[in-house]
Image 1 (cartoon, one colour):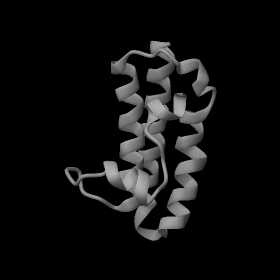
Image 2 (cartoon, one colour):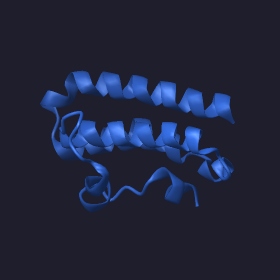
Image 3 (cartoon, helix red, strand yellow):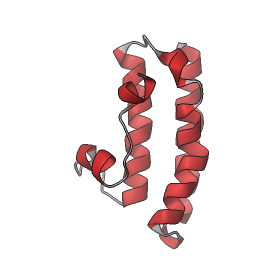
Image 4 (spheres, helix red, strand yellow):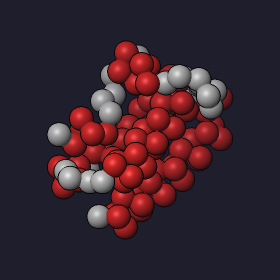
Length: 99
């Protein structure tokens, strides 16, 4: 599962880097839709198979989700984002998505 998780993270971060380039010309709704299409779909695909992952691998997937939230909400690197994941974006943490 380690190779699978690392591949998901690598491709998701690549998509986020590409979206970051055009983020200035996108609205929040459009950016959210693109993040769902390119990143969240990768994280959600067959996530029931990820049950029992180690904390290390779960944290890698969570970092992808957090980076996507920073991109959508235009937050700075060290701004708190945990509450915004649930309140504004309505995204569950990875561990809860898997369960």
